[in-house]
Image (cartoon, rainbow, N blue to C red):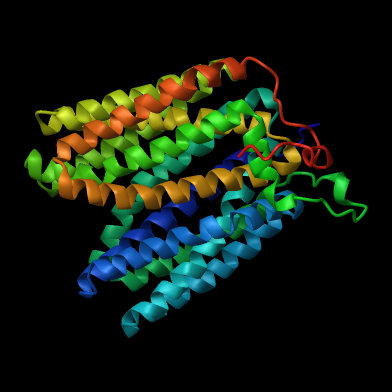
Length: 416
Protein backbone atom coordinates (compact mmCIF):
# COMPACT_ATOMS: atom_id res chain seq x y z
CA UNK A 1 0.00 0.00 0.00
CA UNK A 2 1.30 3.44 -0.88
CA UNK A 3 0.74 6.39 1.44
CA UNK A 4 0.31 9.62 -0.47
CA UNK A 5 -2.08 11.37 1.85
CA UNK A 6 -1.55 15.02 2.56
CA UNK A 7 0.55 15.86 5.62
CA UNK A 8 -2.47 17.67 7.01
CA UNK A 9 -4.73 14.58 6.97
CA UNK A 10 -3.80 13.17 10.37
CA UNK A 11 -4.03 16.55 12.15
CA UNK A 12 -7.42 17.12 10.54
CA UNK A 13 -8.72 13.71 11.69
CA UNK A 14 -7.26 14.27 15.17
CA UNK A 15 -8.89 17.70 15.33
CA UNK A 16 -12.18 16.21 14.15
CA UNK A 17 -12.07 13.56 16.88
CA UNK A 18 -11.18 16.21 19.46
CA UNK A 19 -14.01 18.49 18.43
CA UNK A 20 -16.37 15.53 18.55
CA UNK A 21 -15.32 14.77 22.14
CA UNK A 22 -15.73 18.42 23.17
CA UNK A 23 -19.27 18.37 21.79
CA UNK A 24 -20.03 15.09 23.55
CA UNK A 25 -18.80 16.39 26.92
CA UNK A 26 -20.61 19.70 26.57
CA UNK A 27 -23.85 17.89 25.72
CA UNK A 28 -23.43 15.43 28.61
CA UNK A 29 -22.89 18.19 31.17
CA UNK A 30 -25.76 20.24 29.78
CA UNK A 31 -28.24 17.36 29.80
CA UNK A 32 -27.33 16.18 33.29
CA UNK A 33 -27.54 19.71 34.69
CA UNK A 34 -30.85 20.27 32.91
CA UNK A 35 -32.26 17.06 34.39
CA UNK A 36 -31.08 18.08 37.85
CA UNK A 37 -32.20 21.71 37.71
CA UNK A 38 -35.58 20.86 36.20
CA UNK A 39 -36.32 18.64 39.19
CA UNK A 40 -36.98 15.46 37.20
CA UNK A 41 -34.95 13.32 39.61
CA UNK A 42 -32.65 10.30 39.23
CA UNK A 43 -35.07 8.45 36.94
CA UNK A 44 -34.54 10.95 34.12
CA UNK A 45 -30.76 10.89 34.61
CA UNK A 46 -30.82 7.09 34.34
CA UNK A 47 -33.00 7.31 31.23
CA UNK A 48 -30.54 9.73 29.60
CA UNK A 49 -27.58 7.46 30.42
CA UNK A 50 -29.39 4.46 28.95
CA UNK A 51 -30.44 6.40 25.85
CA UNK A 52 -26.81 7.37 25.25
CA UNK A 53 -25.47 3.82 25.70
CA UNK A 54 -28.03 1.36 24.34
CA UNK A 55 -27.75 2.28 20.62
CA UNK A 56 -24.02 1.54 20.68
CA UNK A 57 -24.79 -1.97 21.84
CA UNK A 58 -27.68 -2.70 19.50
CA UNK A 59 -26.19 -1.09 16.39
CA UNK A 60 -22.60 -2.32 16.79
CA UNK A 61 -22.78 -5.06 14.11
CA UNK A 62 -24.44 -2.76 11.58
CA UNK A 63 -22.20 0.25 12.25
CA UNK A 64 -19.07 -1.89 11.99
CA UNK A 65 -20.20 -3.42 8.71
CA UNK A 66 -20.98 0.05 7.36
CA UNK A 67 -17.43 1.22 8.20
CA UNK A 68 -16.02 -1.77 6.29
CA UNK A 69 -18.27 -1.54 3.24
CA UNK A 70 -19.14 2.13 2.75
CA UNK A 71 -17.14 5.32 2.32
CA UNK A 72 -15.98 6.43 5.76
CA UNK A 73 -16.01 10.02 4.56
CA UNK A 74 -19.64 9.64 3.55
CA UNK A 75 -20.52 8.02 6.88
CA UNK A 76 -18.88 10.82 8.87
CA UNK A 77 -20.32 13.66 6.80
CA UNK A 78 -23.90 12.37 6.60
CA UNK A 79 -24.02 11.17 10.20
CA UNK A 80 -22.52 14.38 11.57
CA UNK A 81 -24.98 16.58 9.69
CA UNK A 82 -27.92 14.45 10.84
CA UNK A 83 -26.67 14.66 14.42
CA UNK A 84 -26.45 18.44 14.11
CA UNK A 85 -30.14 18.49 13.22
CA UNK A 86 -30.97 16.19 16.15
CA UNK A 87 -29.01 18.43 18.54
CA UNK A 88 -30.93 21.47 17.36
CA UNK A 89 -34.07 19.48 18.07
CA UNK A 90 -32.84 18.81 21.61
CA UNK A 91 -32.09 22.51 22.09
CA UNK A 92 -35.66 23.33 21.07
CA UNK A 93 -37.14 20.55 23.21
CA UNK A 94 -35.38 21.49 26.47
CA UNK A 95 -37.48 24.63 27.19
CA UNK A 96 -40.66 22.69 26.39
CA UNK A 97 -40.11 20.58 29.47
CA UNK A 98 -40.86 17.26 27.76
CA UNK A 99 -38.47 14.63 29.20
CA UNK A 100 -39.74 11.90 26.87
CA UNK A 101 -39.01 13.95 23.76
CA UNK A 102 -35.52 14.78 25.00
CA UNK A 103 -34.77 11.12 25.76
CA UNK A 104 -35.91 10.06 22.27
CA UNK A 105 -33.71 12.70 20.65
CA UNK A 106 -30.73 11.67 22.80
CA UNK A 107 -31.37 8.11 21.62
CA UNK A 108 -31.14 9.27 18.00
CA UNK A 109 -27.98 11.24 18.72
CA UNK A 110 -26.38 8.16 20.28
CA UNK A 111 -27.38 6.08 17.25
CA UNK A 112 -25.33 8.44 15.11
CA UNK A 113 -22.38 8.16 17.48
CA UNK A 114 -22.38 4.39 17.07
CA UNK A 115 -21.62 4.89 13.35
CA UNK A 116 -19.03 7.63 13.84
CA UNK A 117 -16.77 5.56 16.15
CA UNK A 118 -15.87 2.68 13.78
CA UNK A 119 -15.66 5.07 10.83
CA UNK A 120 -13.08 7.29 12.53
CA UNK A 121 -11.14 4.28 13.81
CA UNK A 122 -10.79 2.67 10.38
CA UNK A 123 -9.75 5.99 8.84
CA UNK A 124 -6.51 6.49 10.78
CA UNK A 125 -4.61 3.36 9.53
CA UNK A 126 -5.11 4.49 5.94
CA UNK A 127 -3.31 7.80 6.60
CA UNK A 128 0.09 6.54 7.78
CA UNK A 129 2.51 3.68 7.08
CA UNK A 130 2.56 0.77 9.52
CA UNK A 131 5.69 1.96 11.35
CA UNK A 132 3.97 5.24 12.24
CA UNK A 133 0.67 3.74 13.36
CA UNK A 134 1.34 3.93 17.11
CA UNK A 135 2.47 7.55 16.85
CA UNK A 136 -0.62 8.40 14.79
CA UNK A 137 -2.98 6.77 17.27
CA UNK A 138 -1.10 8.50 20.10
CA UNK A 139 -1.68 11.85 18.42
CA UNK A 140 -5.40 11.19 18.01
CA UNK A 141 -5.81 9.83 21.55
CA UNK A 142 -3.84 12.72 23.09
CA UNK A 143 -6.05 15.17 21.25
CA UNK A 144 -9.25 13.51 22.40
CA UNK A 145 -7.95 13.28 25.98
CA UNK A 146 -7.19 16.99 25.99
CA UNK A 147 -10.64 17.64 24.55
CA UNK A 148 -12.17 15.59 27.36
CA UNK A 149 -10.45 17.98 29.76
CA UNK A 150 -11.85 21.09 28.06
CA UNK A 151 -15.37 19.82 27.35
CA UNK A 152 -16.80 19.61 30.90
CA UNK A 153 -15.39 23.01 31.82
CA UNK A 154 -16.86 24.59 28.70
CA UNK A 155 -20.18 22.80 29.20
CA UNK A 156 -20.50 23.95 32.80
CA UNK A 157 -19.61 27.53 31.88
CA UNK A 158 -22.13 27.60 29.03
CA UNK A 159 -24.96 26.19 31.15
CA UNK A 160 -24.20 28.67 33.93
CA UNK A 161 -23.92 31.65 31.62
CA UNK A 162 -26.41 31.01 28.83
CA UNK A 163 -28.45 27.91 29.68
CA UNK A 164 -28.49 24.27 28.66
CA UNK A 165 -30.12 24.87 25.28
CA UNK A 166 -27.17 27.01 24.10
CA UNK A 167 -24.71 24.36 25.22
CA UNK A 168 -26.60 21.84 23.08
CA UNK A 169 -26.58 24.34 20.22
CA UNK A 170 -22.78 24.41 20.49
CA UNK A 171 -22.81 20.62 20.26
CA UNK A 172 -24.78 20.96 17.02
CA UNK A 173 -22.15 23.36 15.69
CA UNK A 174 -19.36 20.88 16.48
CA UNK A 175 -21.04 18.30 14.26
CA UNK A 176 -21.02 20.77 11.35
CA UNK A 177 -17.30 21.32 11.94
CA UNK A 178 -16.75 17.53 12.02
CA UNK A 179 -18.46 17.16 8.64
CA UNK A 180 -16.28 19.93 7.21
CA UNK A 181 -13.14 18.27 8.61
CA UNK A 182 -14.07 14.97 6.94
CA UNK A 183 -14.34 16.73 3.59
CA UNK A 184 -10.81 18.13 4.01
CA UNK A 185 -9.11 14.73 4.40
CA UNK A 186 -7.61 13.71 1.07
CA UNK A 187 -7.24 9.97 1.67
CA UNK A 188 -9.86 7.41 2.65
CA UNK A 189 -9.56 3.64 3.15
CA UNK A 190 -9.95 1.51 0.05
CA UNK A 191 -13.02 -0.73 0.13
CA UNK A 192 -12.50 -4.46 -0.13
CA UNK A 193 -12.49 -5.77 -3.70
CA UNK A 194 -13.96 -9.09 -2.54
CA UNK A 195 -17.46 -7.63 -2.63
CA UNK A 196 -17.23 -5.82 -5.94
CA UNK A 197 -18.70 -8.75 -7.82
CA UNK A 198 -21.88 -8.67 -5.81
CA UNK A 199 -21.15 -11.95 -4.00
CA UNK A 200 -22.88 -11.99 -0.67
CA UNK A 201 -20.68 -12.62 2.35
CA UNK A 202 -22.10 -15.15 4.78
CA UNK A 203 -21.91 -14.17 8.43
CA UNK A 204 -20.91 -10.61 7.60
CA UNK A 205 -22.46 -9.12 10.73
CA UNK A 206 -20.60 -11.50 13.05
CA UNK A 207 -17.20 -11.39 11.30
CA UNK A 208 -15.86 -9.03 13.97
CA UNK A 209 -16.79 -11.46 16.73
CA UNK A 210 -15.07 -14.32 14.92
CA UNK A 211 -11.87 -12.31 14.57
CA UNK A 212 -11.93 -11.43 18.28
CA UNK A 213 -12.45 -15.10 19.12
CA UNK A 214 -9.67 -16.30 16.82
CA UNK A 215 -6.82 -13.92 17.67
CA UNK A 216 -5.53 -14.30 21.26
CA UNK A 217 -4.05 -10.80 21.35
CA UNK A 218 -7.26 -9.06 20.32
CA UNK A 219 -9.24 -11.39 22.57
CA UNK A 220 -6.96 -10.63 25.53
CA UNK A 221 -7.20 -6.90 24.87
CA UNK A 222 -11.00 -7.07 24.81
CA UNK A 223 -11.00 -8.99 28.13
CA UNK A 224 -8.71 -6.37 29.70
CA UNK A 225 -10.87 -3.53 28.40
CA UNK A 226 -14.05 -5.18 29.69
CA UNK A 227 -12.49 -5.64 33.13
CA UNK A 228 -11.15 -2.09 33.27
CA UNK A 229 -14.44 -0.56 32.14
CA UNK A 230 -16.46 -2.54 34.69
CA UNK A 231 -14.05 -2.49 37.65
CA UNK A 232 -12.66 0.99 37.26
CA UNK A 233 -16.03 2.23 36.02
CA UNK A 234 -17.36 1.32 39.46
CA UNK A 235 -14.45 3.39 40.80
CA UNK A 236 -15.77 6.39 38.86
CA UNK A 237 -19.09 6.06 40.65
CA UNK A 238 -17.36 5.79 44.05
CA UNK A 239 -14.62 8.38 43.55
CA UNK A 240 -16.82 11.43 44.05
CA UNK A 241 -17.95 10.12 47.43
CA UNK A 242 -14.40 9.18 48.44
CA UNK A 243 -13.00 12.61 47.62
CA UNK A 244 -15.87 14.81 48.82
CA UNK A 245 -17.17 12.85 51.81
CA UNK A 246 -14.41 10.58 53.13
CA UNK A 247 -11.58 13.05 52.45
CA UNK A 248 -13.74 16.15 52.97
CA UNK A 249 -12.81 17.92 49.74
CA UNK A 250 -14.85 20.77 48.30
CA UNK A 251 -16.01 21.17 44.69
CA UNK A 252 -12.78 22.92 43.66
CA UNK A 253 -10.56 20.18 45.07
CA UNK A 254 -12.70 17.51 43.46
CA UNK A 255 -12.35 19.36 40.16
CA UNK A 256 -8.57 19.26 40.58
CA UNK A 257 -8.64 15.48 41.11
CA UNK A 258 -10.72 15.06 37.95
CA UNK A 259 -8.43 17.39 36.03
CA UNK A 260 -5.18 15.62 36.94
CA UNK A 261 -6.71 12.35 35.72
CA UNK A 262 -7.19 13.95 32.31
CA UNK A 263 -3.62 15.28 32.43
CA UNK A 264 -2.39 11.76 33.14
CA UNK A 265 -4.48 10.45 30.26
CA UNK A 266 -2.79 12.86 27.86
CA UNK A 267 0.65 11.96 29.24
CA UNK A 268 0.05 8.22 28.92
CA UNK A 269 -1.29 8.60 25.40
CA UNK A 270 1.76 10.60 24.38
CA UNK A 271 4.22 8.19 26.06
CA UNK A 272 2.75 5.27 24.08
CA UNK A 273 4.24 6.60 20.84
CA UNK A 274 7.71 5.50 21.99
CA UNK A 275 6.73 1.82 22.12
CA UNK A 276 7.87 -0.37 19.21
CA UNK A 277 6.61 -3.74 17.98
CA UNK A 278 3.64 -5.90 18.92
CA UNK A 279 5.41 -7.56 21.84
CA UNK A 280 6.57 -4.21 23.17
CA UNK A 281 3.05 -2.86 22.81
CA UNK A 282 1.60 -5.85 24.67
CA UNK A 283 4.14 -5.51 27.49
CA UNK A 284 3.49 -1.80 27.85
CA UNK A 285 -0.27 -2.38 27.70
CA UNK A 286 -0.09 -4.91 30.54
CA UNK A 287 2.25 -2.63 32.47
CA UNK A 288 -0.02 0.37 31.99
CA UNK A 289 -3.07 -1.58 33.12
CA UNK A 290 -1.17 -2.85 36.18
CA UNK A 291 -0.26 0.77 36.94
CA UNK A 292 -3.97 1.64 36.82
CA UNK A 293 -4.82 -1.21 39.18
CA UNK A 294 -2.13 -0.29 41.72
CA UNK A 295 -3.00 3.41 41.53
CA UNK A 296 -6.65 2.55 42.18
CA UNK A 297 -5.64 0.71 45.35
CA UNK A 298 -3.59 3.73 46.47
CA UNK A 299 -6.53 5.98 45.68
CA UNK A 300 -8.81 3.88 47.84
CA UNK A 301 -6.36 4.06 50.75
CA UNK A 302 -5.41 7.73 50.23
CA UNK A 303 -5.09 9.67 53.51
CA UNK A 304 -5.40 13.07 51.83
CA UNK A 305 -6.70 14.81 48.74
CA UNK A 306 -3.13 15.34 47.51
CA UNK A 307 -2.42 11.60 47.54
CA UNK A 308 -5.79 10.95 45.86
CA UNK A 309 -4.93 13.43 43.10
CA UNK A 310 -1.53 11.81 42.50
CA UNK A 311 -3.14 8.35 42.32
CA UNK A 312 -5.83 9.64 39.97
CA UNK A 313 -3.12 11.05 37.69
CA UNK A 314 -1.41 7.63 37.55
CA UNK A 315 -4.73 5.96 36.74
CA UNK A 316 -4.96 8.36 33.80
CA UNK A 317 -1.42 7.54 32.63
CA UNK A 318 -2.20 3.83 32.60
CA UNK A 319 -5.49 4.48 30.85
CA UNK A 320 -3.75 6.43 28.10
CA UNK A 321 -1.24 3.62 27.53
CA UNK A 322 -4.03 1.05 27.41
CA UNK A 323 -6.07 3.04 24.90
CA UNK A 324 -3.31 3.75 22.40
CA UNK A 325 -1.43 0.44 22.56
CA UNK A 326 -4.59 -1.66 22.58
CA UNK A 327 -5.88 0.15 19.50
CA UNK A 328 -2.48 -0.29 17.85
CA UNK A 329 -2.52 -4.05 18.40
CA UNK A 330 -6.13 -4.29 17.24
CA UNK A 331 -5.46 -2.38 14.02
CA UNK A 332 -2.26 -4.31 13.24
CA UNK A 333 -3.74 -7.75 13.79
CA UNK A 334 -7.32 -7.44 12.51
CA UNK A 335 -7.78 -7.99 8.75
CA UNK A 336 -8.30 -4.56 7.24
CA UNK A 337 -11.53 -5.52 5.50
CA UNK A 338 -13.24 -6.37 8.82
CA UNK A 339 -11.56 -3.72 10.98
CA UNK A 340 -14.75 -1.70 11.39
CA UNK A 341 -16.61 -4.74 12.69
CA UNK A 342 -13.83 -5.59 15.14
CA UNK A 343 -13.86 -1.98 16.39
CA UNK A 344 -17.64 -2.18 16.78
CA UNK A 345 -17.23 -5.26 19.02
CA UNK A 346 -14.89 -3.28 21.25
CA UNK A 347 -17.31 -0.34 21.20
CA UNK A 348 -20.15 -2.61 22.29
CA UNK A 349 -18.02 -4.07 25.09
CA UNK A 350 -17.20 -0.59 26.36
CA UNK A 351 -20.85 0.48 26.24
CA UNK A 352 -22.08 -2.65 28.00
CA UNK A 353 -19.31 -2.43 30.58
CA UNK A 354 -20.16 1.18 31.37
CA UNK A 355 -23.78 0.26 32.03
CA UNK A 356 -22.78 -2.67 34.23
CA UNK A 357 -20.22 -0.55 36.08
CA UNK A 358 -22.74 2.16 36.87
CA UNK A 359 -25.22 -0.37 38.22
CA UNK A 360 -22.62 -2.40 40.14
CA UNK A 361 -20.98 0.69 41.59
CA UNK A 362 -24.29 2.01 42.84
CA UNK A 363 -25.21 -1.31 44.46
CA UNK A 364 -21.81 -1.83 46.07
CA UNK A 365 -21.87 1.64 47.61
CA UNK A 366 -25.07 0.73 49.45
CA UNK A 367 -23.49 -2.30 51.16
CA UNK A 368 -19.74 -1.54 51.34
CA UNK A 369 -17.53 1.29 52.52
CA UNK A 370 -16.45 3.56 49.69
CA UNK A 371 -12.77 2.78 50.30
CA UNK A 372 -13.49 -0.94 49.94
CA UNK A 373 -15.21 -0.35 46.59
CA UNK A 374 -12.27 1.64 45.20
CA UNK A 375 -9.61 -0.79 46.47
CA UNK A 376 -11.66 -3.74 45.22
CA UNK A 377 -11.83 -2.17 41.75
CA UNK A 378 -8.05 -2.11 41.57
CA UNK A 379 -7.68 -5.67 42.86
CA UNK A 380 -10.20 -7.03 40.35
CA UNK A 381 -8.28 -5.37 37.51
CA UNK A 382 -4.99 -6.85 38.76
CA UNK A 383 -6.60 -10.30 38.94
CA UNK A 384 -7.75 -10.06 35.33
CA UNK A 385 -4.19 -9.23 34.29
CA UNK A 386 -2.92 -12.33 36.05
CA UNK A 387 -5.38 -14.40 34.01
CA UNK A 388 -4.76 -12.98 30.53
CA UNK A 389 -1.68 -10.74 30.63
CA UNK A 390 1.01 -13.38 30.20
CA UNK A 391 -0.83 -15.10 27.37
CA UNK A 392 -1.44 -11.76 25.65
CA UNK A 393 2.28 -10.92 25.66
CA UNK A 394 3.26 -14.39 24.41
CA UNK A 395 0.69 -14.29 21.63
CA UNK A 396 1.86 -10.82 20.55
CA UNK A 397 5.24 -12.37 19.71
CA UNK A 398 3.57 -14.57 17.08
CA UNK A 399 1.88 -13.60 13.80
CA UNK A 400 -1.88 -12.97 13.84
CA UNK A 401 -4.03 -16.10 13.78
CA UNK A 402 -6.96 -14.41 12.05
CA UNK A 403 -7.41 -15.17 8.35
CA UNK A 404 -6.91 -12.57 5.71
CA UNK A 405 -10.20 -12.49 3.85
CA UNK A 406 -13.86 -12.40 4.79
CA UNK A 407 -14.43 -15.46 2.64
CA UNK A 408 -11.86 -17.41 4.65
CA UNK A 409 -13.31 -16.07 7.91
CA UNK A 410 -16.45 -18.07 7.29
CA UNK A 411 -14.40 -21.04 8.47
CA UNK A 412 -13.29 -19.48 11.76
CA UNK A 413 -14.79 -20.92 14.92
CA UNK A 414 -17.28 -18.69 16.69
CA UNK A 415 -15.12 -18.77 19.83
CA UNK A 416 -16.39 -15.41 21.03
